[in-house]
Image 1 (cartoon, rainbow, N blue to C red):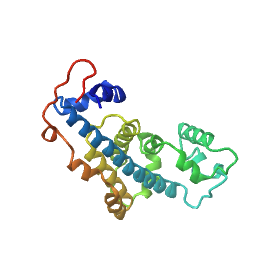
Image 2: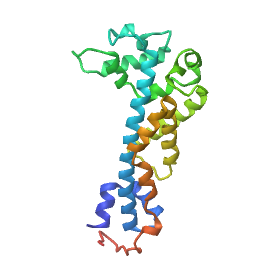
Image 3: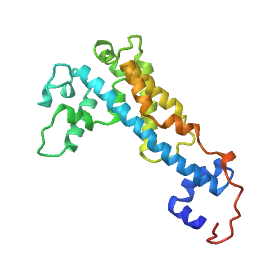
Length: 226
């Protein structure tokens, strides 16, 4: 397989950071690229578990004793709970749901974006945090601002993962530790549950680098092949 074919498939711009990371070594860059793809998939697995646990904890707290339907009788359509912008996000999520099926609280919760959940910890929801939302966490000394900062950082990281952006410059371990901390604040046992299901730290420990790369391969002009 030619060097130029791989560049065409992956794009020169996308492959460039991996080449730079291993001092231009093509074999080493491909090894790093494969590791990166596997690590990205592992990150998304952990984000999947994290997001489900966080949104369920919030819904169980804000929706205590509320029905699954009609939606108007739940916190998701309650302007005393959500700001108008939050309710608008709920309406958008409802519009995306399959027509003809019941619009239940659970289905809407599953359809809301990560940004919606992160936004519930913003400064504008300080009163909601003080009155109700803090009950979603067993760690009583939590400060909303600390949660907001971490949730927004995880949101940005999640978006990079979802759009297949390069994670080479990201502090992946810190984002993973933030997720573990947050689910641990919900339930201490949840931290261990998520940690045992995550492949991320093991993959980070075997990240390829310049020391793993093969000796530089001469690239001829034109198509060139190894």
